[in-house]
Picture (spheres, rainbow, N blue to C red):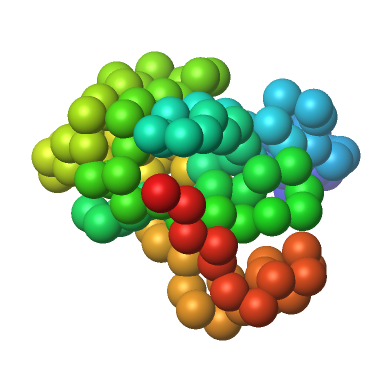
Length: 135
């Protein structure tokens, strides 16, 4: 009987811990957060809207709809805007500094970069052989 009295607090703690855990799938907000931010690119001849896949100090990678992956160099952009995340715009072909670039990367689907093998899988999924570069 003394053993069961010692186990009661541990059993109660285990039950409370289990009850406080949520078991289940992702809700819509969690799924949306796993996607990259919605971005708008303004180029000399075109405006593009899509999901930010990745960014580095040379270019950004954008998924347009679910059917095309585009790349745009910073110096070709008249304006780069992340619509649904608190990130400052980039204007007039400016290459963002390290801190600003990190904010942009954190708004992307792949904030730590997109490995070539993963990019190949994404390109295959949309029926492309290579990233289409826009200017």
